[in-house]
Image 1: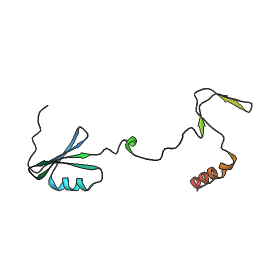
Image 2: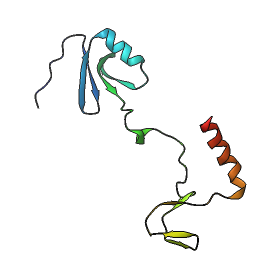
Image 3: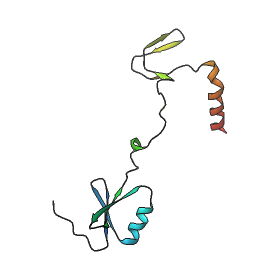
Image 4: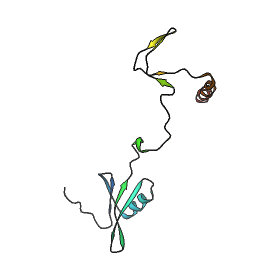
Length: 115
């Protein structure tokens, strides 16, 4: 792999191993203020020099932290034979009946969506 020659004052911007752009000092300082950019510095004899900017990828939703619910609480994929229902074959997802005490909550959500 050939070495990249960087003009004085310009900083390379990467997203992981991928090269994005070559930023001038004004653009580099604007990128550093952004929340998804990490500045990489090199120390040499007591001085620090900005050598690259790493963009943190926000396109991958797996990297975002959030509260994970239990997807199996309201659904299942088991075979069901019911007299009033034609049945549910195995490995086909079906909603479970909503408990009587929880129905008010679900109705309120549906009514707010319809409004």
